[in-house]
Length: 317
Ligand SMILES: [Fe+2]
Ligand SMILES: [Fe+2]
Image 1 (tube, rainbow, N blue to C red):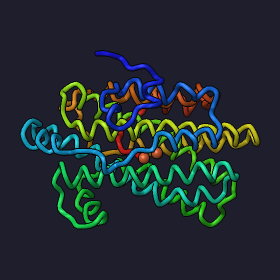
Image 2: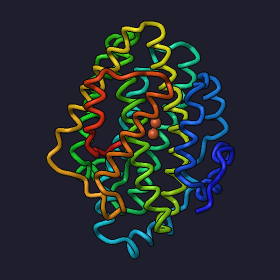
Image 3: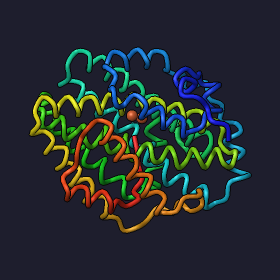
Image 4: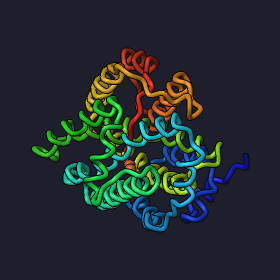
């Protein structure tokens, strides 16, 4: 497989991004993490990288879906992407409350992230309508139609996020509440779950040569995640630097997330997409460890032990 260079990832437009390897986009997420770009640098990058979700063409995807993919592959694909469909919509509506409590530069960057998440919601709306063929005249109709496919593990971190957003709504500048929200959203949901799902579905598409519209749009979405994860890790790093006691909140939030993570009664079967549960587990652990070590956030021994027992849960934003 030809590898693309990171600067190609940075500058690719929507027509070129379909040729980029997902591993290069994941490397791009981590490339700047150690130096943590400022919020206005990330905002400028957003202005350059913003893509038009209505430019995507799903015609070949619809043919792949109907004629080339097996029922098992379609089921596995829908069980992962439904978590995203709802996850994108949830973060789009719950980010404004986090935006309220940040500094001015952070607010400007957050306005771009809210727009990204809204665009990602439209991306999934189009995919479900035009490729999967779910019925509905409105965004809400299509969300309702995909809801039955959402895996139960989606309820865990996104249920927690809804609760954290509600707490933050009552006290938006509270640093403890902001760090709890940021640990769940930027570190776990975006930094671990989203990037793992991207790697799994996009490597399936690339290896099989399926779903080119989805591949282009979701690879562009992954590049957007690079900005979100870098902004989120900057927020956590600065919070802990300003008050080292906030590290305990990062640990406590991870304890909650990792406890919920093991409480699932049915597994997502991803073998048809080419992934064993052990490979998914290793991928998630690696994604979490890379974020933490790059920004210099250490873990308590009991949290470290929980990390090594991570279950392959999948949903994302
Ligand atoms: Fe998103
Ligand atoms: Fe995001």
